Every structure is written in structure tokens, then in C-alpha cells.
Image 1 (cartoon, helix red, strand yellow):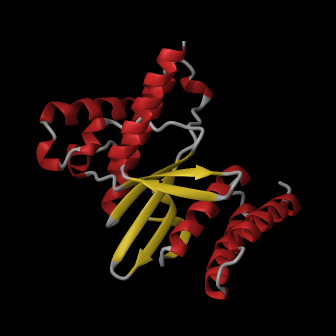
Image 2: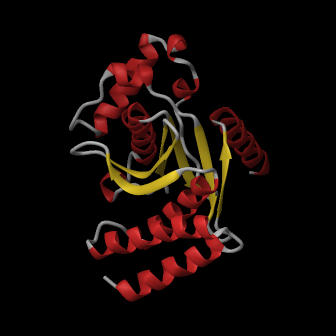
Length: 219
């Protein structure tokens, strides 16, 4: 653990994020900075993920949200970014695409299951739920979550449950959680320039499909 290097890095990011911001916004962003330092001292966060959390938190703060990070939602569930505005609550989970070595031979299935699990588990704790990822990553969002619950078929729900159950059994996910899960937005994070761009899930999926089509043509 290198607390001096971590502190230096998060201070650098905070300076970029607070440039030209009002004193009130600076104070709120710096609160996130200090919270991350405290979490790092407890060995609960790492620098790469912390930078992403700071950028996303700053974006929400600029939208008028009050933001906390690494918030406990239950005995076993901790969210990356938790924000409130008025009576509304907003949860954001940041995904980098990392998969453990144990899943080297089923990386895609594991990642899809993780995304599905997060949407189903976290969205029940908030008014709005979002996924965020660096611009260099692709989120394999199951298309069932683009449909309203009334349009999701039993067979689609069971397919997702079967996939999630392969990797996440404690606790197992409920069919009802998949039925009622909601994904309101996707955030693309530009780490180098310290900003995050919000997209609706439909536009994000269209963008990914176009990128994949372009890649196939270039091969």
C-alpha cells in the first residue's frame, strides 16, 4: 500500500475535476476525494477504480446530486456510486471488463452474467440505475433489459437466470428481480480528459452494434 502515491493521484484528478467549478461543487468533489483516501487506508479501494468513481461522482455532483461512494445497500451489497436529488436515488456501478483467471475459458459468459446480475440486484435499491465503463470497454448488456417488464417473456428471464446462476449462487438471483430490473443509462468515461458522457441504453447498444459492424468490414 502506497498511501502517498494514492493521495497524490486522487488530488491530481480532483484538481482537474474542480477546475473552474464553484466553491460548493469543489467542496463536494473534494469530499469524494477524502472519502476515497480513507477507504484506501482500509485497503477497500484501488487507484484505477477510484479515478473512475471520482469522474462519475463529479458528473453527478454537477447535475445537482449529493454523492457518496462505496455505500452499503445490504449486508452483502456495496455500490460504487450512490447519489440523491430530492426524493430520487441514483446508483451507478462501474465496470472495467476485468474477469478473474478462474474464468479464462468462459470470459464472455462470465461478464454477461456479471452485468445481468448487477442490473437485477442493484436497480431494486434506487429510482435510477446506471452502468459506467471506460470508453475503451464494451458492456455486453443483455437485450432483455432494454424491454419494459411487461414485454419480457418467461423464457428470456429463465435464460438470464440460468446464466447468472452459473457464476453467482450466493445468494441466487430471483426470477422476479430479473423481471423488474431497470437500466436507465450508460456512462462512457474518458479517463485521460476526466469526464463522463451519459447515454441511454438503446443508443449505447446501437453504437456498439455499429462499431462491431465496422470492425467486421475492416477485417
